[in-house]
Image 1 (cartoon, rainbow, N blue to C red):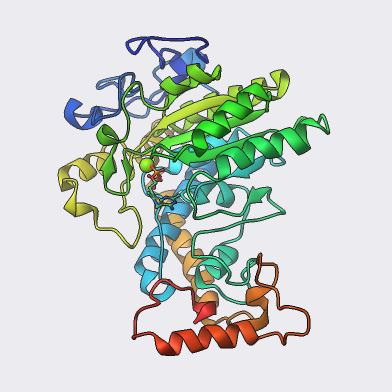
Image 2: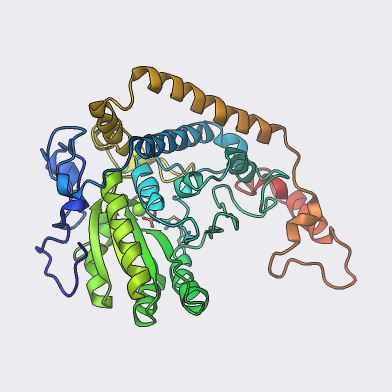
Length: 412
Ligand SMILES: Cc1ncc(C[n+]2csc(CCOP(=O)(O)OP(=O)(O)O)c2C)c(N)n1
Ligand SMILES: [Mg+2]
């Protein structure tokens, strides 16, 4: 399944059949290929919608599990939609539209004790592990219930209980950190835990290189999971890199790699399961490049209509969406019908709105909490708690209105 050694660009990185399982992708070549390098696993006309095109690779998950995938993906999508609509109340938000299959397929293949290092667009992983909607909302609203007490921008979640390391805004810090964490804690304790490290395909200023290189030489049981969603803010992949995408870089580090159809939740599940099994058994890293598409704008600070066409977005939204593809699979088996769909959509909306309402009504965190456990932020000996906050308020008063747009509620 994983490809070893050096491959030339025309080689079938994706030839392992489980890199693409769910049929029903009929994309126009121009959009499909959009600067993604060779070996995109999605091939037009690869089988009837909702059918497994490679039965021998079918993970044969039970109905209950597949319905749970679908419910997680749709609940997550609902949360994104509502938080995006309310983003004016929380200063910032980044949706995950179109990438739900990469999150749910990968996390479902892991052990709950495996440690997750994310970028910022992997909230579905946390949702699947059981992070409550209330805590998602509390984080985005920087309320007193937020585990981080409002010290982070919205969508920078973290959960010690769910083995999800708090997100850092600085791109790619999680890549060397993930490798280091593996080496120091997991390997030394000779446990069978693995680490998964998610990142985007965007340029990573050398930290990706350091992380991949040291994880390979230090023999770390880590899964590097690249969500190749076609864009880094406004920069398309055609301008991001040369050569064979991200999977093509693995061979240079001696890391077995695979490219997978990221909108095919079963294919993502299969490759992640196999990568995890081998990472732990062989003490070595694996690299997965999941080809997907960022259907939403980069974040609330972006308007993607200025750099891509509505037709392009519409194709991914309507024809090659991971939720639509899984829905067709469920329908083809008679596991989920129109009635269940209507009831569940209503229920998902109700759950999200209830959690949001709680966050709307919650108090802000106590002010002194703001500079506790922040490097350099603790009051100096003898200094009264709160003096940092007073100093910040002085700065705020001196600035023109609106100058601190984007600063979270707790600091205002
Ligand atoms: C070190 C650093 N440089 C620049 C940025 C600004 N920035 C935030 S997201 C982003 C693009 C990342 O694209 P990608 O890795 O493809 O992830 P995606 O947003 O597509 O999920 C950039 C340049 C940053 N946060 N950190
Ligand atoms: Mg990207």
